[in-house]
Length: 225
Figure (cartoon, rainbow, N blue to C red):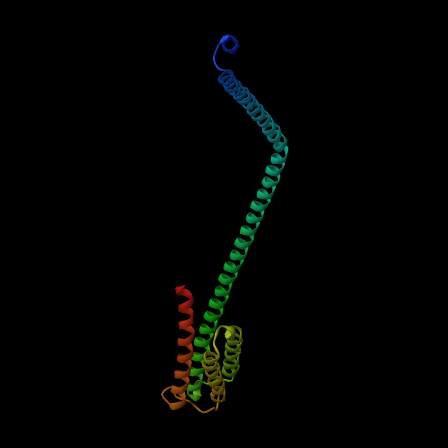
């Protein structure tokens, strides 16, 4: 400390007032002390910064296994979640496919039964309408069993298709069936003839055509989907 030594030498050899000399000496030491404290504080700060850096590094190193474990667990949960989503999607797709297949099969059954009913109604209706209008010379006993067989087939078809009609629609079908059944008393040798243009014949034709048009309309609705 050359400067301090020079100052001390000057103070000791100066002839100035003692108070002024002591004051100046005190000022010099205070400034020197501030410098020492500043350097000490700076050293402490640097030491603390170094220790903090080391502590952060140690802490970061200690967190690596924990972070890896968390990452591993998260990955497992993510994979499990993905698997559950895939399974759920497959389940929904399966349900959707099942519903679609069921709906398609239901539509197929409905179409098949309505077509069968329309066909048998047309056949039995035309057959019975012809049998009740036959002249006596061409009437046979076999025609009775023929008419009964046609009506039995129609009744079976009507029973199988019943579920596809509303209550009012079923009334129309059943009314036609009963109308045809009532005509059995006019089938066969010796039975009274019912001409096509008679009130009974016309009522039978109207009932049959009304039922057939209803069935055909529902068939066309299915085909249009």
